[in-house]
Image (tube, rainbow, N blue to C red; front, side, top):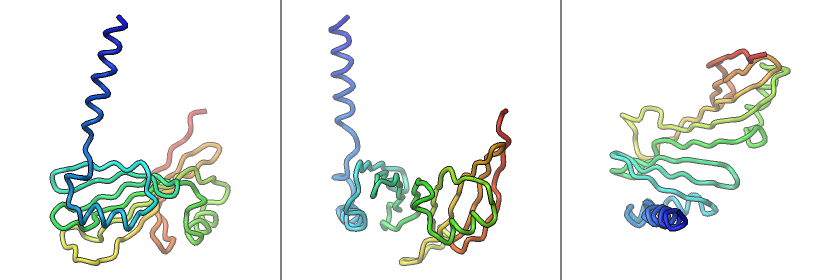
Length: 159
């Protein structure tokens, strides 16, 4: 039984050692990533048909960036964090519009305005999906960079 356990562990370790590494990716893209995120930790590259996805932790914030394969353009950038990292204008907008609700978590999504017609150097458009908690509900609010909000979903808590 011990031999089977040791063999299984060795097999799993061997398989995990063949994880995808950035050495198969265009050096310019790897360099651009390392310049943009010099303090990135736990970096993991994944190759898709049309894109590369890089998952990492940057200054304590879990992040994921998607690069277009053909030219290395950024398609999307996602960050997961708590209210302390949320821009002040967005935080104030939420506190004003949803008094008494606690910010539970934030997903920040930056994407190309229109991925089909993207131009080099075009600015990403950023939205904040904020999960709010009250005593009886969970609410998800989508906000743009100006603080304009839209309720995406609302659920009653089971009591």
